[in-house]
Length: 332
Image (cartoon, rainbow, N blue to C red):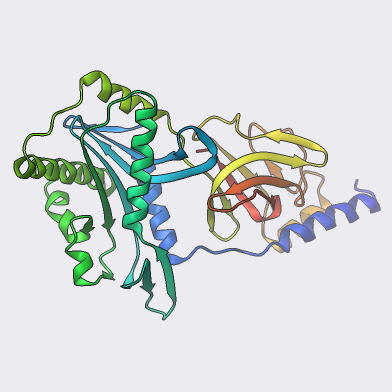
């Protein structure tokens, strides 16, 4: 039977859990997240198709000689012996306008979101990837191609933007999507991207003359090097918001439990009943923990106020996030 002090302690845990605010994701971000999950389920390491390979969500150091400068994430990398491509996938909706170096997205509800120029950013990412390969004495395919795919049909872009070679609108993928025999949209989409890149490669060869292919040993080394690159770790917060970055450690009291030793692709769930009434009676009548972690930290006793140290992408410093706010941790 719980003592009075024990019940008080459990009610404090109950209060901390039910007081956590929900942090919902923007609808368009959630839609993009669903697409990302579908792509990730298909592309574990990489997908090969007609002498080309495609990789999903690979992190590339900004400086191959200095990890401290941070890393970029490339949505899709496509490489063949003659071409290497960095592809950014945007799920934006509404209307897009260009304002200097900013691409301003006007959403249907009137909100405006200013984005960095994805074309220049994507080129910078590809340059960093090529620099990484060259630093490892791997010859890079001679043709370097950057593409930004708008795969949401509900986006209107300026004509001068839509006509740019680096921009791929959803309808431009349709001729590839409709001819694929693969099952499931994610697989048809990925193979369509590969077909698009190979089709553009053939066009460049016809226009600019024959591109020499890199030797097979360099192509194999490039595929191996890109495969070894990590993806971002993620934290799913209560309410659906997902943040990306680096999982560093769990902080329980004075204990520090490293998270980088977790296997890539594994996850840790935060188990607790979020129903206020049910959790209340569990607190006063039960004895089982009101909040706990799944394997490999299931034996660790935690409270809602214990934290995860997490370095969110784009932020200068790591932050501590309380377990009361967390649904699960995912290792990239």
